[in-house]
Amino acid sequence: MSAAKAEAILGERLERLTGEEAAGCVPEYKALGQELLRSPRFRTAFRQLKALADENRLVAVSLLQRRGELCACEIQAATGLSHATVSHHMSVLGEAGMVEARREGKWMYYRLTGKVEVTLP
Image (cartoon, rainbow, N blue to C red; front, side):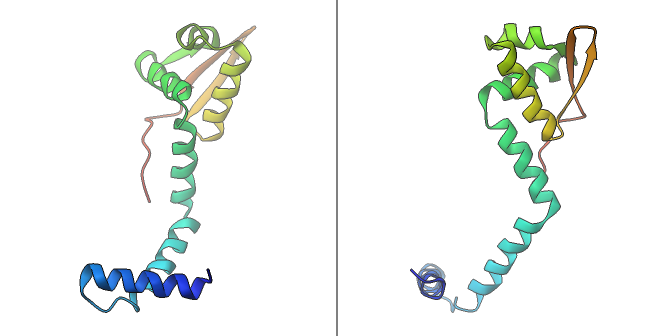
């Protein structure tokens, strides 16, 4: 289906729902959606929500909120995951800007970078 046909169908659907002329609003909302997608705040929120979409990462973040700082082995014990998998999950959270890591000898310790709060753009 072409983009023009999809816009026409959407316009008709909006008119049926609202009872008002909708053909003019389709381009406006399309532009608004594109603007949101380009927004740095959107990219940050998307990255954080994507990182939190895994239940093990969400458990790890919740544990860090409660305890402040944990070593990888403590997260491993809480989740039942292997050391390598915990390391991967913490790396994803780090790339999303949510977790910081520090090494002390052989041990890796993790803490939240600040209050974990996803703000929608």
